[in-house]
Image 1 (cartoon, rainbow, N blue to C red):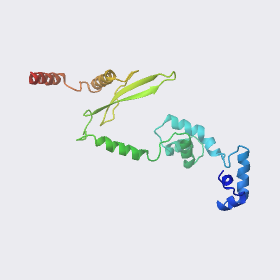
Image 2 (image 1 turned 30 degrees about the vertical axis):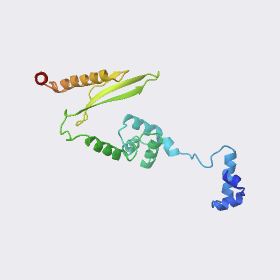
Image 3 (image 1 turned 90 degrees about the horizontal axis):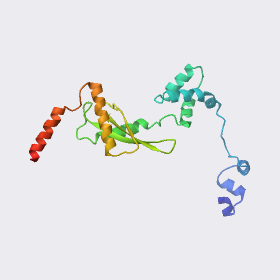
Image 4 (image 1 turned 90 degrees about the vertical axis):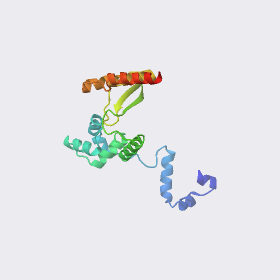
Length: 204
């Protein structure tokens, strides 16, 4: 298009971009027949290893490419680590290399939210909502509490809404789960009654 608009000959254009005219003619012929100038190249090594590699990757998503490569070799298939890594990248089954850096940056930002970082479990709980779309087009909202320090996930509350009632229900589920795990409530009810009584006296 640029060559045509400039009124430039093919020979002059190839000289300008430092390309052999035969190469240009070959690419031009492929383009006229709706074929790409290059590729896609055959990938026999990836195609042969794909069933085993994908099976291991889906079974253990937390594994890296070296572990999956070792398990694939253990199954009797000879393949290189680089081939396994490229295959996992092609199928979107591996985290990017900067994933750990991003996690550290997010952790630093979370710590900056506290005047004093928690030093043990059950000092700070986190609550968040997630949305999942069903195959019929509906949406479920899932609310869950987890301990900030130990990263312990308490049971989730599922609902089509995401309001204050759902948040309270998720917290109540987490409190019941805490009693199941530790055998006593998170907050002593007597202490809560004393605090309420002191507040009523102060307001009176």
